[in-house]
Length: 188
Image 1 (cartoon, rainbow, N blue to C red):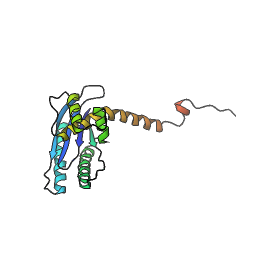
Image 2: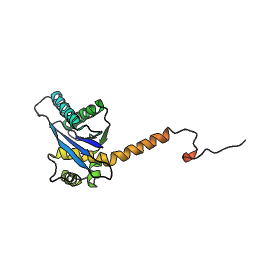
Image 3: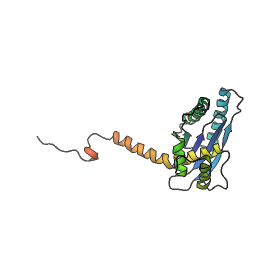
């Protein structure tokens, strides 16, 4: 599967594309950032992010999109910009009918490094190792986007299978007995 990871940000929106499947080697297709000037008005910055992401979608045609879930910070302005960039990424994917999954920063760090408290250097080092790159992707936003894609390939597929199994069990015919066995027969 091909996953486009998005590390949302208003100034630098990290983007990374990874091909792979659980249990198989991963391959980096591309990574980079969509940049907007800080002095520009927010609506124009969001438009630039949308145009940049649309170019990534057109060029790389992902099957799935993984976006970092916005978490609360003390700086409301930063959270707002991140949330707005995240919404643009989800809109671009949804417009194309591409499924979107949100992953928390600690979930991504744990998937890639084994620790939900790993630092940016650790994440960059593991992304470099997992994708067999010569050097860590720069800037760090691009490495974070690749980490999101890796996390989704490894965790998303399993999560989707579990959700599918749960949904199937809920819609199964009521004729089954407890634990999916045959219903008990009662005689009067």
